[in-house]
Length: 364
Image 1 (spheres, rainbow, N blue to C red):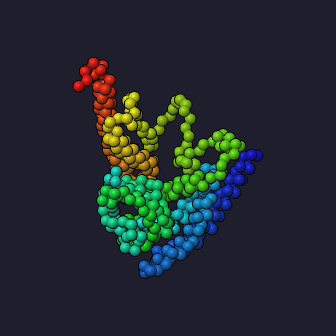
Image 2: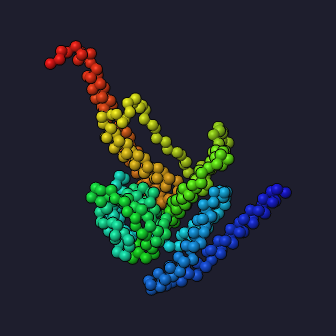
Image 3: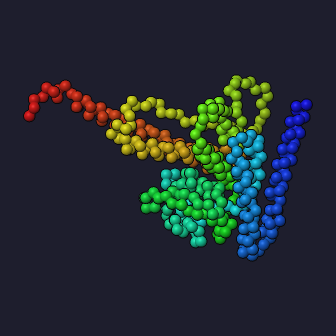
């Protein structure tokens, strides 16, 4: 009896979700068909503006629903799938810059030229190194593209870039991707899905930051007892695995290898604090660079979990992870040597200052 009730409830939910999808996505079909058959560019832009007028308000409503913390993972996934379709069909943001193709893990991606007609003309110059878009650290042109299209046209985004060795922070107003004149690469599905995940993560962080009401004792105790659900679990990207020993009965050929790469910690740590080490500036610089490389590896490993990733891109990402890890190992070895030299120099100074023979020397 209970099973029949649950089955009817799920059918009702699925029917309601499909009805919502038809209501939101149905009116776009004729417009998209008209846009694809329009020859005149001005006509295409007019139709794109009409599609934006339909998609953006509905997308805002679904995004507000996604911020509801009481949603079950199934409810969240259902709403997210409908919102993603609107996200793909609606207008996407464009910064209006071309990239020079340089990939520098420390200084970001080099801007070739800003595009006339976009706010980027006011902010950027050719040769600037774009390091950050919003809260996203940029390591290559692909990461920049994913971050940019996760926003809507008209959004103002804070950017961090380097010009002539000086770090600058400014705000740029995004334009419409569909109105770029010389777009060489279309927005593929992999880029759109990564952009959507980035957008949803940003929405959830905004929702968490908006909770400013002081917690009462009852609310605090309830929070301590609540189940912690990771964002990746809520998106149903992975399932929890019980840590138990199992014996396989039948093993079939095929399938994909799944593994988690862990990096070993330092084999020892000096008792002397880095703050008192004479070489603390060099140690701090190496630590900063190591952190940047580890952050880049984390982003690449997240991208490698995408099943739809192009095989050539997957091979390139794995090669870059290996290169970054080799660089990290080299910098850790160098940092360890610098620490030891600083401790030895500090020990010599301390022993010289407290040498008993110094006390026996006559004053001159």
